[in-house]
Every structure is written in C-alpha cells, then in structure tokens.
Amino acid sequence: MRIVMKFGGTLIDSEDKIKNAIQIIKNHKKKFFNNELVIIVSAVNPVTDILLDACNAIKKKDKVYVKKAVNDINSIHTSLLDKIISKTDLKKQARKTIKCLIKELEMIMEGAVFLGEVTPKLQDYIASFGERLSIVLITFALRDIGIKSEYLTGKEVGILTDSNFSEARPLMDTTKLRVLHKIEPLFKEKIVPIVAGFIASDQNGNTTTLGRGGSDYSATIIAASINAIEVWLWNEFDGMMTADPRIVGKPKVLAELSFSEAVEMSMFGLKYMHPRALEPVIDSRTAVIIKNAYNQKNKGTKIIQNPSRESEKTVKSITSIRNTALIDVSGWGMIGAPGTAAKIFDSLAKNKVNIMMISQSPSESSISMVVRQNDLDKAITTLELNFLGRLIKQINVNDNVSVIAVVGSGMRGIKGVAAKIFTSIAKKNINVIMITQGSSELNLAFIVNDENCEAAVRILHEDFGLAK
Image (tube, rainbow, N blue to C red; front, side):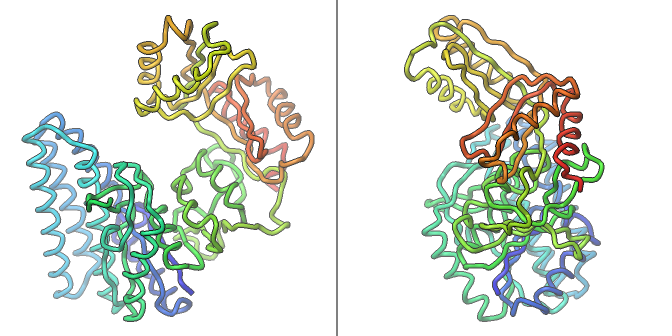
C-alpha cells in the first residue's frame, strides 16, 4: 500500500514533537507499508510567519528586523537538530546543510532590503525557506534511527504549477508524470521521500507556493500522482467535528464524510485542511484521513467518495466563520442592467477582495456580499471609487457579523430542514440578516450579528441531536 503522510508545523516545533513524528513514521513504515511511504512536512511553527513578517520589513527597509528574523530562524533549526540527532557525522552534515540555506536566505534578504521591494515571486521564494529547512531536520532525524530517507523540495519532486504566486494551482497532468518518475526509483531503493509541503515551481523554474496551509494540498497532489491508497493528515485534534469545540462543549468526531461535505466544512470554523486539498483526489479512490498525532487509537475522520449509509445524517455539522462583514450595495441604476454584478465582482477581485457569500434581491436593486473584516476597507474603497454615485447610490455596512453554516449531504430533498433551522434560531430570539443555499442543498448558510454566533451554533447543535 502506498500512503502519504503530512505533518503540520505545530507537530514539529519542539524536540518531543519531532521525536513523536519520527516514531509515528517508524512504526507505520515497519508495520504496514512495505517502504512505500511519502512524508510531507510543513515549516516549523512559527517560521513561515517570521518570513512573511520579514517581507513586510524589507518593504520598509528595516535592516534590524530582517537581520533578527534570519538569526531567529537559524537559532530555531540549529537548536532542534542538536536535540534530535545523536550521531556526530549526521549532526555535522545537517548543520552544514542548514548553514548553507541560512546563508542563501540572508543574502537574498540583504539584497531585497537594499531595494526596499518584495515582488510576489520573491515573496514566494523567501517563504519557501521554512519548508526547505524543516525537511532537513526530519530527514536527518530518520537517518539517525537507521531509516533511509531523502529530502526533496516541491520543485525537485516534480510539482509544476501556474505562475499565480502565493496561490499557485498545480498542472496535474504534467505533475503526475514528473512526480511518479521521481518517487518510483526511491521506493525501489527502499528510501522514504521527505517532501517540502506548500512549495512548488512554475514552468520557468520559479518557486511558487500553494497558499497558507498548502502542505495538505501538496500531500494530495503527490497521492494522486503515485496512486496512493490513503493520505493521512496528522493534526492535534481527533478529526472533523460536529461543531467547534471552543463553542460547543462536547462535539463528536465524525467518522466518515463525503468529499463535498468535507470541502464545505474546511471553509468554516477550525482550519481542518487547505480548502483546495481535496481537488487532486476527488475523482480517485484515494481516501483522506484526518488523525490526531497524540491520540493514535482514535481512528479520526475518513473522507471518501461514498460514505456508508450508517454515517449519513440529515445534518452533520454546525460551523461558523467570525470576523466577517456584510456589505449591501443598492441603486435604481442596477435594475435590469446586464453585467452589473460582474462589474462589481470583477473590480473587487482585481483588488484582492475575496467574496465569501452573495445574495441579490429579485428586483435587482441591491446586492449583499460578505467579506472578511480585514478586506472590508479595501472593498469599501473600491466600491466608492468605481461605482458610488453612478451605478451604486448607497453602500450600507454591518462590520460585525458571523456566518453560520449547516452542513450535511442528508439534507438533500428532505422537507422541513430550513424550517427547523430557523425555528431553532427564533427560539433564541436571534435575527437572521441574510440567507443563502445552493441547489445541491448540501449547505444552508446564514448571517447573524456576531454577538449571537455562539448561541446560534449551540442551539442548532442541540436541536439536531449532534451531541448524541
């Protein structure tokens, strides 16, 4: 069986955590997988944040912060390798490799500070150093216990993407050929490939990144390329749950989910996985399993094409997104004017504003949009500069709302689900500001004032019996 395992940055940010990850790899390689195991590794927490903060400091020509960032990253990795590698020769090799990478990072940053500019291409290259350093730690830690392993960047393993820096998308047909060609010989040599998550390269050889949390995406890209039977995403929680445990005291772990349900849930509440992570395997027989690295007896959540009937409930999860804002634009000039919505959304997209939910009145005189609070200023400025006083007569903003989503494939074709949802909400005297539901009936989402978010999630979780 071919298995891909991914370890996030919070699972490798201390000596004990790395040793736990190494033990997991050792146990499963020996017991189950006949050496055909690929490991995907994220950057050590919080290295990616340090690198991105350094990019902002470069733009301000802040040499002091940039120098401190390089020193901090060097200290994090050299301290860890001293603790996790016992053999002197391996420790020496690891130190030399880390030193070379740190020197390269330092030179790039010094040059960028001189110019005071960070292009999207350069930012991706700088951000890639987190994973490039972490794979060295895991590879040498495995070699230290006698497991043959080789570290590879996303570029080296063969992941090819477009040139949309920071949010690159894989070119899967070419990627599959290249990744299989690279990994097959390593399997024959009984070598465990340790692959840097999050990073890849475009057709010109430039380093690209797959977006924050992109190591999940790397894992499924590689799984699809080598026809892996399963992808294991190791985390610090037992699996995907019926609600956010920070809101509901004792939510249940969901044993099985369909791909479509998991995609909906990954967009809300806890960040279970990268929102595009399931794309590469959605049409395959590959299962994605979310497991707890510190509670391995728990089977976690298995995401598959066709879950068993036993796992089908009308509603499976109540999820939420906070720190969001509602923008309502209106004007008589919008009525019957073809392309109005397209113009508004295109203008917002060009200014990097992501629209999370949309609703339009049948009269076509108003459009409501939900955005994240950190995008609100950009969104309002864009709308005012381009449309206010012409196409749009008025802009109304509610800057403190939450999105509540009720998710479950069992909702399809079942009468009375929406009625039950809003009856429950009414019992708590909560006002619903906006509602959306796709024709798939997989997800019914609505907007409430943020102060009512937790009460809404709790009453729905209780009334749909999800704690049972």
